[in-house]
Amino acid sequence: MQARIAFVRHGETDWNAQGRLQGSRDIPLNDAGRGQAREAGLALGRGRWDLLVSSTLHRAAESADIIGALIGLQPSLRLPDLVERNYGAGEGRIVQGLPRPQIDALLATGEPEASVAARGVGAIDRLAAEYPGRRIVVVAHGTIIRLTLNAVLGGSHPHVENGQVLELDWDARGRDVRPRALMPRQ
Image 1 (cartoon, rainbow, N blue to C red):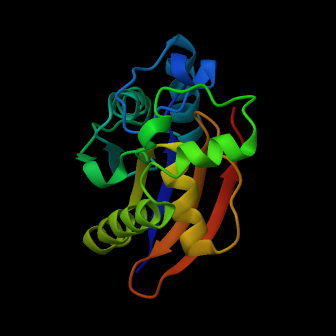
Image 2: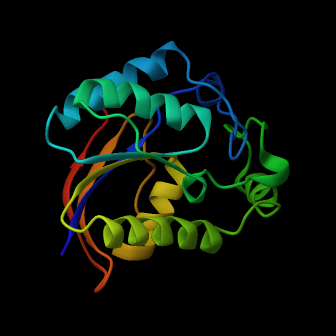
């Protein structure tokens, strides 16, 4: 039996606005990010969801709290496997405008993409298996969402915007993952 999964990227932080890599650093939401979380909650709709889950990092947890107030759920779980990729020496660095080879060198010091994807797929597989047939909102981070989707859908999913909602059906047993609606940022 499939679970309906709605991935939501956390709202904006000051580091997002500055073009800094956050990774596993625990940076809080800014006011714009709180607004994006509210928009995501309104887009998800009240009463449609059974479970609300987030990463343990503050920006995702606060986004989940804001969304939960709008959809009528308290966050049920904070999962360490949903934290953002550790970017190693790149964390805290402004990467906008840097040449691609310099960005790649910074990223190479962090957690491998395959490891991030495996964490993300494993976490969602466990949720789908533990809550079959349920509708689950998962508030996490751009890179782990993108790499998880790439791993199960194939291809290269584009950048996930702050506050963006991506909804799909997920069957952990047969890995039958089908996009339901890919909602652009509000």
